[in-house]
Image 1: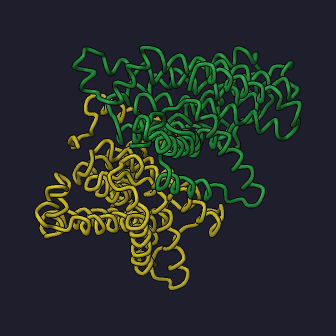
Image 2: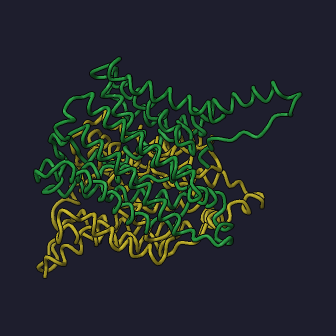
Image 3: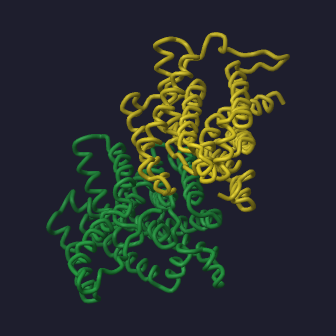
Amino acid sequence: MSMTVFQALNGITFAALLFIVASGFTLIFGLMRIVNLAHGALYLAGGYVGLLVVQKTGSFFFAVVAAAMAVAMIGLFTHSVLLRFVTGHVLRQVLLTLGVALVLDDLALVMWGGDAFTVAVPEMLRGPFHLGTLSYPKYRLFLLLFGIAIFIGLWLLLHHTRLGALIRAGVDDAEMVDAMGIDIQRVFVYTFMLGSALAGIGGVMGGAFLTLYPTADAEILVFSLAVVIIGGRGSLPGTAIGALFVGLLATFGQVWFPELAYFVIFGPMALLLAFRPLGLFGRAA
Amino acid sequence: MSTARRAALIALVLLVLVTIPFVMPGYKTSLAIEMLIFATLAMSIDILAGFAGRTSLGHGALFGIATYVVLYYVATLGGSPWIGMLLGILAATVAAVVFAVLAIRTSGVYFLLLTLALGMIVWGICLRWASVTGGENGIRGAVAPPFLAQQSALYFFVLAIAAAMTWLMWRFVSSPFGLTLKGIRESESRMRALGYNVPLHLFIGFTVSGFFAGMAGVLYALFNSFVSPSTVALAQSVEGLLMVIVGGVGTLFGSLVGAVVIISLENFVSFYTERWPSVLGLMFILTMIFAPQGLLGWTRALLARRHARKRVDHSGGGTTHGSQSIP
């Protein structure tokens, strides 16, 4: 019994991480129709930056901030320097981000090599948390709270700020927003940086318990894609539900069929797609 | 191009290909084998990308499934190479059926996303299902039938199959069925209004394309005698797609040029540095920015422009056709 609760908690906390990463992905996808295949590479880059900062300063908080800023800068470069050349060509944009991902991963391999690294967490988050008979790693519970905080933060941003209103309007009809005299390009830049920063934050958070290694980016990208495919483009609640779904399935799948865990996410994803090709909350572009 | 000139060109290409093992034995012949195999893979991707307007990032996985099945059946289970090859093609085709059922309802960027996710799931399974796939170590073993042990024999075998597949693919895309796929690429709703069963056409197109990818994967098993998760990884699909783009999307034969360019470059670069993935990534970025219609399309557009300028007093130019750029 307590084993099942333990696994369920593992699933939910993993879902929190998936939500952080995938929300960035879906924001960019929803507003700009850009499928940023460099998202996994940004996650890994963020993780490595965090690792470096923790080693130098010993502060986990600084690590998260530095990773978010550094990865937002990579996002800014990708968007404003590279993607500028291919505006309006959806597939070209996707393939270009794929090229960015290949370069980033290779650079990461040069700098950090093939070993697995763990980002050190602060003293107060180490060890287990006791609740009655159940004890559970503190860090993972912190991650869950952090994920919920990000959800609330993004929700408030999208629904209670001017930028959020512009993003929502842009998701529905970017051209119309532009025609109303609003600089939609600036909204695009902010969104791209925000989405990238979320990947970077996810990298530090994930790097603390999943470790960072050269193919970690591909793994997180598969999960993020599954989350967004299930949840639907540009939907925050969809992403949260998709993340819970994928997080729980991936965790229990690993317990039940250790070698075929990937297949377990594939089943429901396939089933859902058969009925709703655009995902749970997806709308036609 | 007139029929006679086209026939002459094909004959010339075949002649060059036939002489390769005599003129450049050893390492260069093995490079040529690799080029033929990847050209077949790239053409299978072009069937979908160029003719049905669906860019797939899952074909590397279909290719790799065939390679895995051949190696598992022959090297691990000790079965006959011929049955192994048949099983490999069958496995890739069945996987293509599954991919197709899920992916044909989508188009554009969703199609790309979905084939990418499906391909990566295959990669994840190959990586984790260690009792069958050998995990990260992969499967190693000579699987080619004994009469292909010599390099030149293997070369001619691969050449014969690749040439036959190229001919079949060319027949496929220029058949009425292929024209229907082109119609779907141009306007899905119009084809539906004309009474065509669009999903069925895409389903068959995808399955056929997967069959050819599987053929290439089987040849790769014979050639490489080794398979690991990197054979089914995204990079494989990416490289195949880049060959298609460099050669010109929708030209089919351009993929051969693309394969020659990319593999030569890969070997040239690997000679100096281990940073091939970076170079591949940069090439992708630069191609997307500067030459999305590919090398062939780029030169053809250039030639057509010069040609049109020369003939401007006679006919006032004309329409150019050939490769299209990625939308």
